[in-house]
Amino acid sequence: MDDLTSGGRILAPGELCQAGKLFEVQQWIEAGKPVNPPARAKKSRQRTPLDTAIDYGFHSLVATLLEAGAHIESASGKSSLNRALERREFEIVRLLVDHGADPSSGDMRTAFDARDAEILAYLIDRRADVETGNPLAYALCHRIRSALRVIKDYRASQMSFQAQTSRFVFIVWRET
Image 1: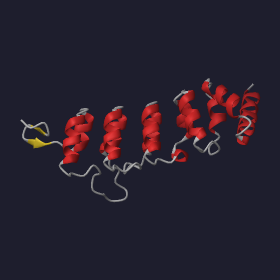
Image 2: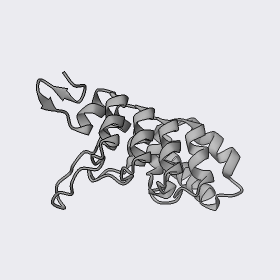
Image 3: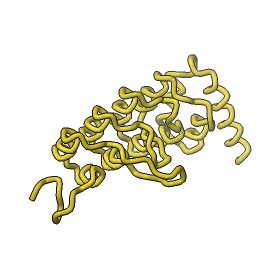
Image 4: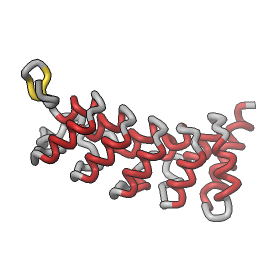
């Protein structure tokens, strides 16, 4: 049986990605087959092979798909960058940004939820949106310790952090 088939049925690239079959995905690409599924109706949420590779944390598959021209912004309605942040996959976040993902498209609340100071520094250094939704105040309210390092390292360069810290203090004061 060919590696690209299962029970006589040709596997789609998403299924190959889910199974972690890097070499089979490379064969698919070398055969000139598309890495992006055909467009569907606007309201349809379609999971792409890249979405699947990110969800399963397959760094090499993500790299292979991106190099083959996979669309970074998913048809599923969820940002590829947010997918990687939700899974705390710093190397995949870096890959996505290196291949053109806009750091400001990632939800910084999701980035703080990752509780990884390295991810936070990487995104902030690349001009992530640190104001929309008051992500620092959110992180402080949820006792995310990596937020303290962010305050220490970026308080001088991120003017909104002082306002967000004040907002946090007000929220805590109001609740006591």
